[in-house]
Image 1: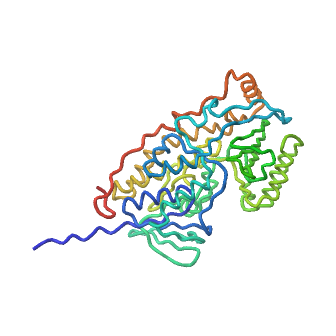
Image 2: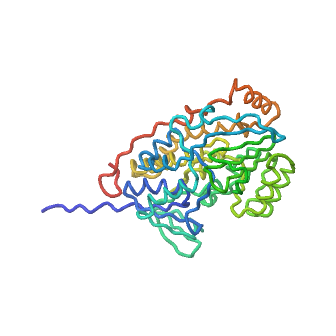
Image 3: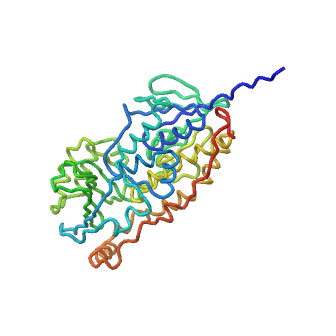
Length: 407
């Protein structure tokens, strides 16, 4: 009598968040034979034109996804960065290659381009639930019951929180964000505005010890991306959900009547795409609890000062999915994910140096030293720390031999 082998049922995973880490881990989980659903509170994949970096180990992650050629085509290819003094006069205009930017094949793409490429990679293979979110989680021995805000209930084997620095998933399982939010003493506002200076593939940076402003043209279009960044001793949690309060905070921090500051503040007040947040990191002793794990900014936001948020999300998604396929026990997989990723995350978070970086100094002495170096071109800000960006070598994970079963 021939023995009949029933197929191993797929493990089901709910991923919360459809920005970068969410679709990235959905891609790998589907490839490894998991049944994946992504829930996203917005009505569609959210884009945004501001530039993000893909560097070091993350380049290998997107290469293994087969997305590297698309991202290379989307590369912004910034040619020049101009530093202006507090009065608006030019300190130095430097070619980006002189500053070490773009070395080792690093990519800079518009955030919306990356999210669209990731969405296209999974849209036909995983289930998307737009305009919904997780209301409650009930972790049981046989699975985790999810109650959605839309009223439905479903049971999954696992839940992955990929919903950003203000992760709702993290709050549901581990408590208030304040427990894990490490504020670096500054806030920022990003928005688009008319390109009246005619900038093309270039950026302009203005800096005082407590404030920074930037205009960034990712191409030669009619609009540019603006950034206003300011130091503030206390974290304005109440402003995160109050758009008018955000506008007032930013305007009050930039009373200057020089360079492009008045124009930027005026445009910020009316910008429909204003994005406001704190310059912060998420620091946690554990990135999982029970059947729920966190990935990307939800677990280890490094802050925009490091330029590594996207790269850590892409690498973390690859590692978490790989450990889940390598181990049938999710608790062991979550532990392995942390063992692989935590040293890499710690190194990259340290780049922020509590809010002070070489390109964006936060005190008068550091600012004068940077400006002197720029004027003489004798000691440029240090090359990007490529050793840190590439400190992790991606593990190799085998594809499952049967649906949902590790090899």
